[in-house]
Every structure is written in structure tokens, then in C-alpha cells.
Length: 318
Length: 318
Image 1 (tube, rainbow over the protein chains, first blue to last red):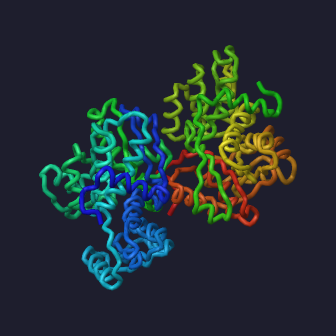
Image 2: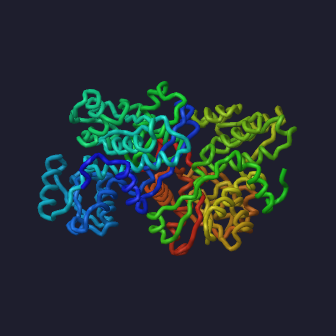
């Protein structure tokens, strides 16, 4: 277990630990989008990551840092999304059993993907209480280690490696790094990496107006849980975690809100111009940079594209 | 003008001529798709090419090989698709005026893209006769050089460079290269490159059952024009050109038909698994390899992904 905010050494160790099991994803640029913003954007493409999202990093770092005793009893989590697949894959590589609690309403294809990695899927009613109760029962019965999707310093250290690679792979220093914020794992980890490995680079997050708990919490200085979130950016509906919040208060410059139309327009711009598939959640940082382009004029900006898992039958384009 | 089938030297010269003006697109692989086929696939990503398609190569090579006298009078073509943008971009880079005849029914966004490159768009009725008549008038008035989208050895030499790069960028020799076939530019050019630069590698094409003129022509040994083609692969509806046909008869091993469902399934597989955007036409070679996977078992296969220009509001997924 990691009981403190990850140090530079913790992040370097995490990177060393996982680097043979993840992709070092490419950093792409696009002339058209640069012109639209009036700045130089560097897109770190975690949509090309294993399981299609950055979550592979945090999941892998956590599972691979467990003891043999812990691994023998397996790992557990509840998730209907990318974290489920990340833990299932990491467990498979570590030779451990994964128990994944998924709501019965989760898409069949997502359950199948988790099972394909050899994980055991335990279905529950689609409520947060049912998920947590079912998970507690699984942990009580099996002794498996619960891995939280973002409120865990090992997970945060894993997500931090995405920004570490981005910083290493861009020639000159970045003026800013922008991520989306949901639970806060991908904001807090990269904020730490930026502080340690690219001193002077500012860190921003984009957040949907319809799921603005991080914005409110950041500005009030205390954690305000999300109530009835609503956004096409379905990866960002969760409430900010305590551990990420503590890091965000210290290392993040600002959280920028965007509306639904701005998210869909930014997503469309990436699809049409870069010819790559990103989730709506991924488009939030670009939407934030486009909306605040005066602030970012002529700067060098790193943007972490978090994942590419979309339902092609339900796209937000007209 | 190039009056003979391009030689190895012609293709090398074309590559030298255009290489500073095009992207050397990446070659990607995907574990999941390899497992589905039971072979090792190497995808040459021309969807990331300038103007979003391989057409940039042929257009660029042709325009850049014109004399100063010719350039002064400009270049002309008729196209509603990728060739229009390719010629417009090439002309801009060469400092020449482009005259692009486009059907009035062409999407506004495509006309805008061509105009953005500084080309003059001349609209006509959406019939082949109107396109050809309008083009003849434009050429008669301006003295501009007409650049055919595929029935031109300079264009073919340009398209050949896509396969030349693929062959150079894959470590070991490929057993086969598979392209789609419409007018034949991207099949004949790569067939020549393969013959010259990767002796022993076979060349195949995939073609939609609903636009099977190349299949029929190839098997009968004479050019049979396409009548009332119908396919989601809208880049492959044109009739095979005479010059490409002559090369295809000599250097291509086989043309493999696929149906509409196979095309959409292959397209979906690339979008979902590789997280990249390809046109339906692009999915035809993969569909052909999946349909004939026994034939390709355990082989090393290069596939040219031709372009990524799709209308996101009209996708074939359910």
C-alpha cells in the first residue's frame, strides 16, 4: 500500500514497473487544430492504450505492486467501464483472479470483454449501494484486495506516468498540460508528474458544466460531492475522490467548465481532423482550450486524450 | 507526361519529388485483429495522409512534375471527393491555379475544403456528362492541364509510393499486399512497387460485390465498365481505368469480392479495435482477408488503409 502522496521516485518506480505491460502511446499534433486554437497542441493518445484507455496504467501499477499473498487471494473492484477492463487485464498478467462487480445494466460487450481477460463478473442491481454492498460481500468471501478506480495513491502514481511520458516525448517545455476531471485520478497523477518533471508547466482541467463538482470543490476549497450529474462525457460523472482532491488543491492552476455543444464540437474536430476515435470525455480538455483560447494563445499545450471506448451505434453527431 | 508504365526509377523519382510535401504515414498493427485473421497484418495508414487520403500522393507527383509553362496555365479536374482536395492542395504548393469541377450535389463541406486551398470551384449538374463537358470547357478556356484521378501514369507512380513506404517500413518481407480497387490507381501503383521492391510478395485487391467491374474485367481479361454500382464503399464505385487495368492484369494475383455486411463489420473492427477512423472503402481489403482467412493463414500481410474522410452524421453502424 502507498500511504502518502506519490513522490517523484514513486512515479518513476511505477513507470519502471508497468512499462513492459503498457503501450508508450504516441504524441500527435494537428495543423488545423493548432490554427483553430492559435497555439501548439500535443495530444498524448491514451485512446491507443491497452484496454483503450489510460486506466490500464493505474490498474497495472496497483496490481503489480501487490504482495504474493495478496495476489493469491485475487483483486476486486466495481466498475462498468474502463477500470473494470484495466483490473481484469492487470490481474491476468499477474496470474491473479479478478472479481469485477458490474451493474446488470452494463452493455453485454463490456461484460464479455472483462470475461475475456479471465475475470469473474458478479452482476448486481444498477445502483451505487448495490455495487458497494456486492463488492463488500465479494471481498469478505474471497479476501481479494479492493482496487478503487481513483482514490488510491498507487492508481494515481500509475496515471501519473501518462504525463511523464508526454513531458519526455515533447521536445521543448510545455506551458500547460490539460486533462479532463471526473474522479480525479488522471488530473492528480499528471499534476504530480508535471510538478516533478516539468517545473513551471501549469496544469488545468476541463470539466462538463453538467458534472461540475471538481470546479465547485476546487473553488470552495472543500470536497462537494456530485449530485445528479448529466453530460455526454460519461466518464466524468463520478464525484471527485478525497486523495485526488488533496493533490489537485495543491498542484492544479484552474478548472475550466465547458458545455455539451462545446464537448461534441471538440470531439468532432478530433475525429474529422485527426482521424482518431476518442470518447466524449476525452474531448473536454480540447473544448476547454478552444473556449479559453485567448488565455492559451501561442502557448505549447499538452492534452491527454484519455480513451477511445465509444458505442458506435450511439454517437452524438448529427 | 509519362507515356509508359512507371519503372522502378520513375517510382523512386516520384517518391523523392513528393516526400517533403506528404506525410510518411505510420504502419500500425493490432493484436486482436491478427487473432481474428490468424495472420500478421500491417496497416499502412493513409487515412492520416494530407487531405485525409492517399490521393495526395498521385496529385502531388503529377502537379510537381509539370513544366513551368503548364503550371502557369493551371491544373483542372472533376471530382467530388479526395482527388479534388489532392489537386487543390498540390496546386497551392506549386503556386498554380486549380480549377475543380464539382457536381452541385457535392457536400458543402467538401466544396469549402477545396476552396480553402485556393482552388476555383466550378459547379455543374450531377451527371458524368455534365462533369466532362464542363471540364472540357474549363480546359479550353484556361489551357489548364487536366489531371485524371487514376488513368494517368504520373498519378499511378504517386500512389505507388504508399506501397514503397510500407515495404520499407515493415521489418521482414510481406507475403501479400492487399488494397481496395475502384478506378485502379491504388491497386496498380502498389502492384508495381511490390514487383520492383519486394520480389515474391503477392498483390490482391478487395472489391465490393455491388461494384465488381474490376473482378469481372480481371477474370475475363478485358475491360468491362461498371454499370449502376451500389456499395457503402463509395470510393470504389468508379469504373476501372485502362492504364491501371493493363498493369493489374500483369502484376496482380487475384481480386476478392466482399459483401456489404462484411465491409461494415471490417470497418467497425478497425474503428473499435484500432481507434482510428477509416472510410468504408478502406475496410474492403480487411473484409477480403477476413473472408478468405484460410488462404492467408499465418502470413504477413500489408493492407493499405486508403483514407479517413467520412460523414460522421451518416455512419453505417447500428
